Structures are given as C-alpha cells and as structure tokens.
Length: 205
Image (cartoon, rainbow, N blue to C red; front, top):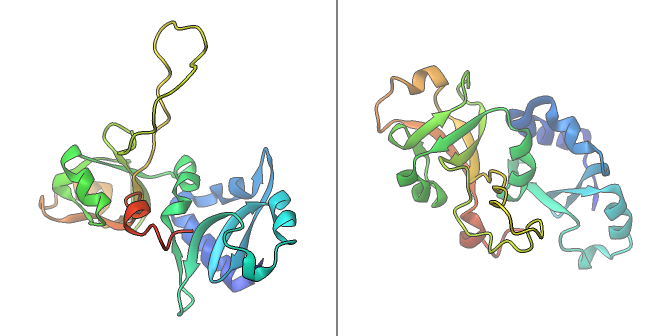
C-alpha cells in the first residue's frame, strides 16, 4: 500500500470531479477526521488516517482491503470508479437521474438507460456529465431489513430512510436533448450499479 503519485491523484480526482465537482474536498476534510486515498494492488482505497496507521502494521501480502475501494487502475493506467464508491459519491452529486419502475431491473443488469425509461433528470445537466441514478421512489431495490427500536415511543410513523442510489453513469444527452429524442435513444451510459454486488461478488473489494 502506498500514496498515489501525482499522475494517479490527478486521474482519480478528475474522475470524481465528473460526479461531485469541487465537493472532493469534503471527502478529505471530514468532521470525523482526515481521510486519504491509497493504492494497493492497482486498487484505490479511501480510508481515515487513523485506519491508515493501523493498516501499516499489517504485512502487504496479508492486507486485503484497507478501506473502501473507490476503483482500480487498468493496465493502460486509466482509472475506473467502482460501485463500492457509490455511497460516498451520492451525497455530494450535483446531477441525478431517476429511472421509471419498468427500467430499474434493466439498469441493475448493467444496461444503459433509454429515454423511454427516464423518469426525471436534474435541470441543466450537460452531455457527458456524471450522474447518480435513482429509482423514482428514491429507495433501494433490496430490503434493508426491519427497523427496530424507533424512538422507543411507539407513536407516529418511523422516519423515511434516506434516498439510496442504484448506481451511476454518464449523461448521453443533455437535459434539453432528453426532451426531444427518440424513446429508444440512450440517455445515460451505464457505469456501475448495485446489482454488481451479486453479479461480481467475487471481484468486488
């Protein structure tokens, strides 16, 4: 495990910038401490400095995943974001897309989003802008399990869970273009989705 080189840092930040812009700084300087990025076996991990110190005592060959994997470098040194970074991108994403119920499963199988499956898109989204993809109900497509002990009072309704993204992609069309394209036109290029936790279980770290 080692710090990223200047070129690697630039590649990672450019990719993150497509989705969260200047909010990258909020990933590093957090209220709960300082966080950093480290490279381990071609994968980029996001972890706290506290965890970094603990990981330093583990032999390299025994270290599996020192933090949250944000993505990996290909053999050609291109950085690809992983779905495991989704929960950190979503809170800071400026542009979002909502897919219709009939198109959710298709997206979760790794397919692009067509105009016919587009429910909503953030205003002023530019072509090739990174977007986070949600269902129309802003809820995950898998159950989070029963909630226990809400408030301890037994009164009223429990609070709604925060919106959970389904994945992320790149806008194939701008907001304006989406209003007039053919129903079968691709409006979002698929990049990653939560279905990968099932499809690629053995390779995600």
